[in-house]
Image 1 (cartoon, helix red, strand yellow):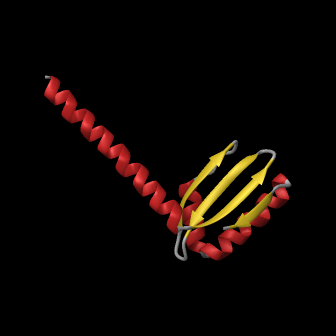
Image 2: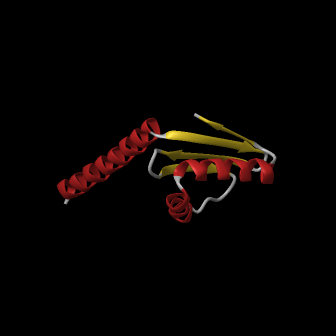
Length: 97
């Protein structure tokens, strides 16, 4: 029984390490739009074709819906539209990195 628990624990740790590696790969290879305000902060990661991820604090973001919308209007158009919306509605700032 102890061997089984050790194997399961190893698999869980391995999956966590793989997940962290994928997150860092996406983070390092994507363009980013970083927006900050007194209401919270959001970083949207993207490439030429699609939104690839996000991280947020203090606010919500419906990634799947926004990803589909970005596909419809184009990623560059989406990023500019989101930037304008964020600045107007939160009185915050956005910066492309």
